[in-house]
Length: 132
Image (cartoon, rainbow, N blue to C red; front, side):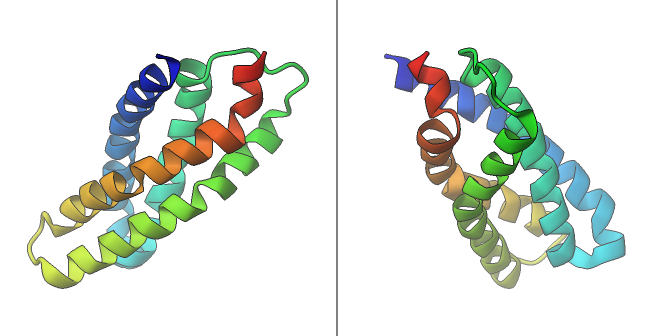
């Protein structure tokens, strides 16, 4: 079942993205605050997951594919999941206090956006890779 394998790989890549997200968030937050830093950390995580997903999750060749176009398309299609992710993150910061609240917000937001982002990547960004 190819979709199942792709989902598991996408989720595993997401764990790496989660690490990038948290690392960048905690590095940038002292300069931009928790909300601004979250935007930067999401972009960093999305960039890392794009590179890993194109290499390991959706591995079929993409003849003539422009990397810049694919990357921009990936970021654009991840916006729906990003909105879900960021909303859960903000709500978590409002409801939970303490030094681990941002990490919990990133974790819950990532879980909330997982299905939206997987479906977007599979059916909108990397669909041509699966047809070849």
